[in-house]
Length: 187
Image 1 (spheres, helix red, strand yellow):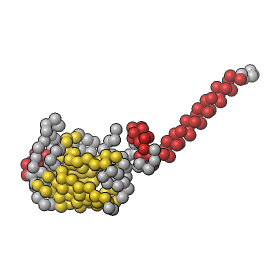
Image 2 (cartoon, rainbow, N blue to C red):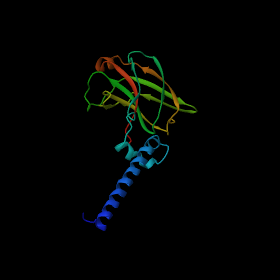
Image 3 (spheres, helix red, strand yellow):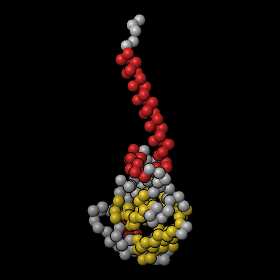
């Protein structure tokens, strides 16, 4: 049997050090994932985590329910919790397809008011719909807001939605209409 050279042990030590360092870094990244994505620490790393290690529920729809655009004054109540910091959107999922490149105009208006503790956010929705195609459905974004700038994170948020101006044509053009709130990409 041939004796091993000093160079051989050097290579084995370097390889072991590299593997150990990789395991430690991967473990640290895994442990830090939830606090970073929830905005509790190291905010500068959020884009890195969102791109490479997004949680499965990051872009889930927080609220979705059918609304009737023909019924003026109809009110809806719901509660949600913003788990992650960043951009959110409220809008409509629609059943029927539409021309994504056509500027939509309609009479339909919604009033949204959300309250979480002493913080509140309110907006009139519908005057400037922005079309989107998505995994959860196609539709229109009506308003964007930021957590924690506009509403706090990790607190039950009570919301009221009201049809301020009905639009019979909206139902004819797009079929079933669902209101939704979901997390938007921060990249």
